[in-house]
Structures are given as structure tokens and as C-alpha cells.
Image (cartoon, rainbow, N blue to C red):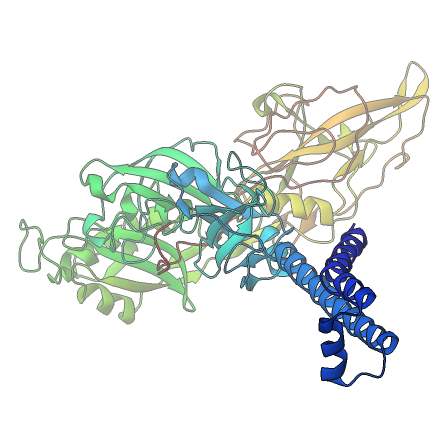
Length: 591
């Protein structure tokens, strides 16, 4: 197309110059008039033909120069029009800001101006935007807050990352009806199940772990509701909503404080507690950390303490000496004033920790020096290691309370082979822990796996004159506490095989005694009378052990799903940290 235009333009110019210059000259030459004679004489040309030839050459060279100039002009104009687009006026987005949260798709870079406009520079490359697209951090989401459209009908959104690190224009498709191209709509929070207990308290009041108008970085410039929760220690908080950060998975609760509504907001789930005893009012209380080798193993709060020198006046201000009353709430003393026991309060705080109070001068001094608002540390020591006996149960297909205890094979005489007598492998360890300490279902499940207790068999027995055996598959384990008089309970489902010999043959006896106690609990005197007690955790799956709330279900016949043991979703001690309420807000423009 360009070539055709150039040819036509060249022809037009040639024809124009020819008509105004060459043709009139030829007409003059025919008449040999005065003008012609003067023209030749003036320029001293040798003759008519030479003059015309020279003039024609001059005209042709001029024509060529003009043609090249025209081509150059057309080329420059065309290149300029193709290279850059024109952006129309900027418009601020007015829709609900929370509906303008987006995430990068990784297909387009971020620019200082719409990408096709002259002068646009890269803020974040396509590769960088790709990293933001796959990030596991909420701070890498973006907020769209402005838009420009180009003369090519391309939409560019003005965006900023939630952490304020990147800000610029990114291609957003061909229409402003939806986010497309380099960004797409994002849900920064995902709905979560409400907890069973919805009344909670601040576990550690202070400047950290406060409430927010939105979980940190899930909305642009999310803000703290209060800078310090200490003045609200002890306030009853009611959970009204629950959600997780979509990228991190951290669980947050929305809590309402009826006493101080301004405190209400979102808070990280691990920094609130259902234990009212932990609620800490600095004007009246003392917080106690029980520690062992510098590690806190239990925490409690001595509440509503009496001021020293009074038997009735309660402390009302931070820094009030309350040592006498604090000591009396932790330990008991005899008539001579010597400590001889711990109080029910101390027993309750240490229950399940596996530690016991240490009567020492350091602890006594710390208690006597206590003032309201203080956090004191009292040392404890580990309790004795004990073996908790294992008990094996057969699921009845109903809840665990109706599961029947299995008999552990010892010998053919005292424990004859039948469908309810199991053979244990040689146990390499005992299920041992500090006396009184809690263990989780995950702890017991791990023990079962390492000791090959996931799949058990009966010895071969007779059914209608034919060999038979039953295979047991672990489906549920229970949490509990260590103790020689407690039960570590494992629940199985059964499947019987007839006209077959058991993998363990007639059964082999293994040692079930150690110097620290019974590895395996006593067999039931009459099979079936004993039932598993306590509660389980997780949904029971016949394909392997789950460590969550179990219904100990499953039929005794059914398909054989003798899979490995899985620990399921168990809160096996310790809290998840997630992105825990990082402080500070970005300083970028409000989007």
C-alpha cells in the first residue's frame, strides 16, 4: 500500500513540474522568439538541445529529491502513530473499596503510565508481577483505585500493593465492567467455621495482638482499633464472625466488646482465650508464668488481690503491693508459716503440663514482692516419667463409648484364638511421658505407626471347620494424659477372612512388661464388657487412623481399607503463628 502511494505521488509531482517548466520551454523554442534568444544568450548555452537536456536533468534531480522528502515525511508520520497511544482523562474509582481488591495474573508489567503511552516506564516487570501472582503473602495483593482508557480502547487501572511497595498502571482489559488482563478480582479473606465457644478474653493484653478494622494487609491501609488492650484486660469478648487469610491461612475472629465497643474488631485467633482466669487487669491482678529452664509451661492470673496490710481492701491501682495475698493464693502453709502444699488454683493451672511446683526461696521472694500489674515467674520441675498402658478396642459401628475391648494374645491357654484376640508385634518403646502431662491424638497416632500397630491380626481360628482370621485396621486414637492408671486407647475396625491362615499363624507372645509399668493394659475379664471411655478427635475413616473426632464407626465386614495411619487435623499442642498482627501501616496515598 505504501509503495502504491509513493508511486502515485511521484507521478503527480513529475507531471506538475513537467507542465509548468518543460512544456512552456518547448513552445518558446518553436518560435525562436526574443525570450528564447535572450534565455540562451544570458546563460551562454551552446545550443537548444544542450539547454533542454540540462534542464531536464535538473528537473529530474529535483523531482527525485522532492519524492524522497515526501516518502520520508509519510514514513515518519506513520511510525509515530503506531508507536504510541493516547490516554484519556484519569478517573477515580468510586465503588466499594473492599470490592476493588485484586491480584496480579502475571501476564502484564506495571508501568508509571498506561503501558502504550509515550514515556511509560516499568515499575515492576512481568516476572515480578508473576511472583506477586503466586505469593503466599497478603501484602502482595493489590487495590485498584483509578483508571485511564487509551484511544485504542485499552483500559489501564491505577493500583497499589497492600504493603505499599508497588504502585502504577497495569493493563486491565478492554472494558471497565470487570478486572481483566494483568489483574483479576481477589478475595483476601475466606469464611471459616465459628468456634464452639464464642466468649473469649485477651490472652496477653498489651500493645501487641490488638484488634483491627480488617486483618492486617487484607485491606489497603487496615488500621488498629486500639493501640493497647491493657486497659481492657478482663473484658468479655464475643466472637461474631470467623475468617482465614486466604493466602496465609491464619484464622481471625471478629470480637465485640460490650463494655468498650471501640475495642471491637478482628483479632488473631491464637491471642484470645476461653479461660477467664487468664484475663489480666493490671489494676487488681498479677500474672504468673510457671517456668522450667526459662521456658513457660503454664500461665495463670491471680485476680482481685488484697492490698498488703489489709484483709478486706482490694487493690485498685497499678503498682499496689499485694505479696501477702498473692502468696496465699499459690501455696498453703502450716501453723508455723511453712509452705507444705499448693492451692487448688496452682493445681488447676499446672494440670496437664507435666510439671510440679517447686518450693524454693526464689519463688517465695517473687510472690512476696508482687505488685498489681506485674508478671512474675515461678519455677517448676518436671514430674516423673511414667508409662501409660495401651488399650485396644473394636469399633461397634457406633460411637466410641460402645466399642468393645480386644484381648491381647498371651498364650493358647489363657488367651485362646478367636475373632477378638489380637497379636501384637514386638514393641520397641513404651508410650511414656511426664506423669499428669497431656498428650494429643497425634502423639498416640505417631507411636502406633512407629510400633507397627496400624494393622493387627488375630491368630488362626476355626469357623465351621475351616481356618479363619480377622484383620484389624486402626481408625481412631484418643488424646489423654500420661499416668500408670490411665488408658491410651486405640480403636480398630475388623474384617474377617475365611478359609485362610493368619499372617501371624497361631500367635506369638511378646513381652508387655517393663521396669516402668505395663506397656499393655489388662485384658478384659469377660470380653465385651469393657468399653472405651473419653472422647476422640476427628472423623473416623476406615482407611487409616485419624486423630480427630472419631465416631469409631465402620462395619466389621466391609471393604478392607488397610491404609496407613494419618493424623488428621489435630491441634497437637502449640499455636500456629501465621502472620501475627504485624504492626504499622503503609504511607502510600489512600486508595
